[in-house]
Length: 110
Image 1 (cartoon, one colour):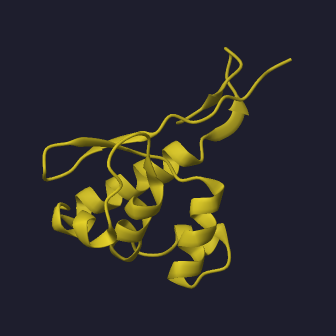
Image 2 (tube, rainbow, N blue to C red):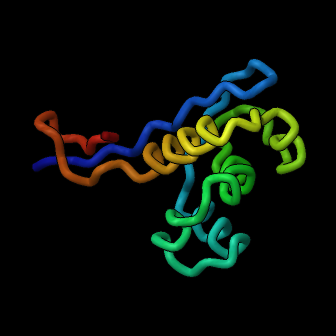
C-alpha cells in the first residue's frame, strides 16, 4: 500500500534576517478565505499575491517561531512584487502537495 505523507513547511527569510516556517492548514485556509471574502480554494488561488501575502503569512506561521501580527509581518516584508508572488506560490505549494504517490510512495511537492 502506498502512503501520502504530510507536507514540509516552506522556509522564508524575511527582512529581519530570520528564517521562518510557513504551512497553511485546512483551518487556516478557511479563516483566510473568510478574511479575503472568497468561498472556494480556487477563488483564493486566483487573487493577486499582493492582496493575499500578509494574511497568508499570518495564517500559515508554523512551528515554534514567535507568531507575528499582520502589522509586524508587513514591517519585515520586502515590497518586491516578484518576491511576493514566489513566496505565496511556495507556501501554497508546500501546503498543497501533489497528491499523486511517487515511486517511494509519498506525495510530491513539485
